[in-house]
Length: 92
Length: 363
Image 1 (cartoon, rainbow over the protein chains, first blue to last red):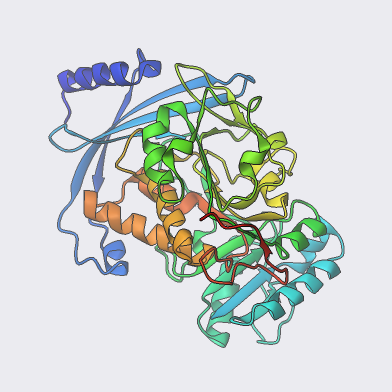
Image 2 (image 1 turned 90 degrees about the vertical axis):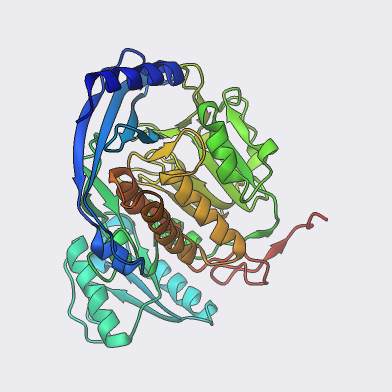
């Protein structure tokens, strides 16, 4: 599991890099990804080896555009089992 | 190459009235495609292949396409004629935890098995926009012989967008919003272009796409900005290809397609994702590959199909799995327009039976 300390560190990083998400409380989810054998087979990529465990911190915020349209902004930080950031994605 | 054009006669009639003009245009379109063996079938009418008819549900129409394939042979290209009320989008489970209840997708139509994320057929849809004239127009597009492209990005995604846009354009020419907004947008930017690329915010409720910088979200593109646009549109905007219950007045996708020289539109039906900076992932990667293949001269249908295959392959190699965002990306991107259009360097830049308008090539 990801520790509180790691989450605080990521929140600080996000607040610095993405100020609009400063103060937003992320939702932490854990996901076990089973080997996606059929996809590997369809793409002739050999065989996936093992279960993967990933964590996701999802920051969500509703913003208002200049013409008062509300848009849900989502920033997701994906972490591996060691708590290292694998990727950061944003909704378009 | 076999191409199946499929529609529903009852549903089409309810949406556009008598479909005689559309049927005529499809026949002319089929005659002009001499490299293709083409069948135009209504899923709700008896057909020459004696395939069992289908109901107006995505699942039933998909089964109909499979039956046709068994009787006729492998279908390489699939063209869905009509919007959601004629040939419904699949409503797939949303892999992501966001506000989309389902993901609207044409992937299952393009897939022979149940791994919908990776399609085998080149598939596109011609939306109806509630008008026979609109459909006929999609079958009679022409293109201008040009090599220049247009690109526009939200300020916060400049770096990520440059990585995508360099495939088809000069990164220094990429417009950034802000400072560019719909008020300062110049419609000639979209004219005589080969590719039109957008990496902006989109919304289900609004007809606009938005920029972003320092917490401000100005309107970057509005339907009124689209005048005499040309080329192939590729957009990463959330809901960029959302057309359900929309018309060309409140959907940029339909506004672009209404333009006689816009040959195709590739976009997302739901909330799309991408990285803030390179390396490209999700929507960035998909659009990048789509542009690369189209630039090389593959048909638009093949370009999107190959882009999806390559995104899946790349992400499996990079991460070892497809995560929720990757899976959603593969399902949500659709192509509108003629899937056989090609922008290569050959003399085959026409769609339907229209000629090629030539402009001076830059030396």
